[in-house]
Length: 501
Image 1: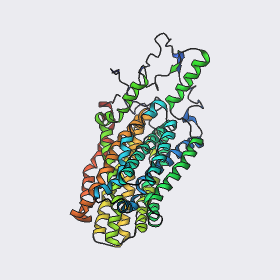
Image 2: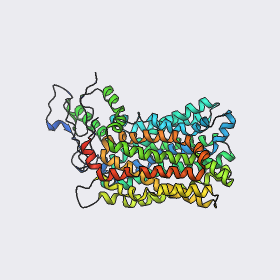
Image 3: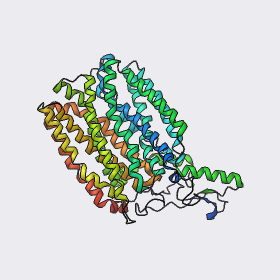
Image 4: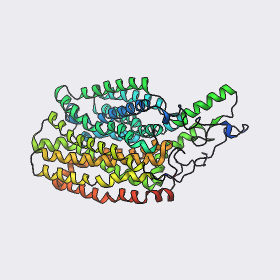
């Protein structure tokens, strides 16, 4: 039977003391016959220890964060670059149902959800090897998509590539938490977040012209080339950043040098305790589910994030339909429609990187992570405004630039939901459980991203573009109290519902 002793999800003591109420785990006995004096607890050699990733030079930290963002860029490029070529696959493989045609695109996102069970391994064995293995697997499965000969093989490879691609998406926030304290984390998360935010935008632009000129298979060959290049760069420049893994290595060296098995990692970062690796792994794999079940802030933030993400993919899936039927755009030109959404995202990123950390750098030592959510409160209402703008201008067939400007507004506002909620959860749970918290978000996002687009075509057929998007805007307004609730009551909710994993 699994040991029922629980391990609190808590931040390290380098984080702000008030971010959670969970107490650090007590040190478990590594060896019943070994001494347990503090002198045998292995920690950093003071706050300025050069081996601590948070003390690395800025250039070295960026050398870890930027490749992680590039990995996520590749994974999200693959999510949408293929979108303009879906019709070619439908014709080549003889697909006759709209559901299967939509799943050609969205099953990749569903793979993201299935693959999140892999990411907790980074909290046990470190992040570096997981990046390399997942990138290699993603490269292989992407090549499988490029050379598929029927619908079944394509869907299988597409799903498996999504599973592999989930790792950079969930471990990236943990990498940033490893390297950057909360007061400076916003701008570094913005740098990392450029990849996953821009991928869905840049992908269709490139994919539209590629599918029109050289065919859909070359979109996957290009993705494989990008993946292979970034994998090579990652092998060269990336280093392990997980505090627990680095201290375990230090403890192992001390045991070997001193021939003394008493050396063990300080309890602050020791999450395995007296559990075997297999038992800890089983428990680690259920962390995201437990966070969704027992943490109100994780559940509500994830659901709000997921709905915005699902609507984004609904837009991406229906852009070809809308702009072909209403404006007669060709596949290549349809890809350019996504530019406005990307411009909105970049504008939002600029605002976020400038002001997000401001709320974590107050003179008061007790600044709370909920302070970051002010930007969400201010700017998330622009998303329903954008949907109303986009829907009714497309319905009335105004000049094509008008609905495209509506998508710019949607892109601007959606960033402040999807990015800031992730930064907030990283601040709350810290490096110790950031990957699990982001996995919880990713589970809900991928379910919404995989299945909500299936509603797009029927919604617009029944209600039209105007009333269909008005319904989506109404749902967004109904969900708006979620960030208000977390902003006002997040601290008390964390104290009342401390999650122990």
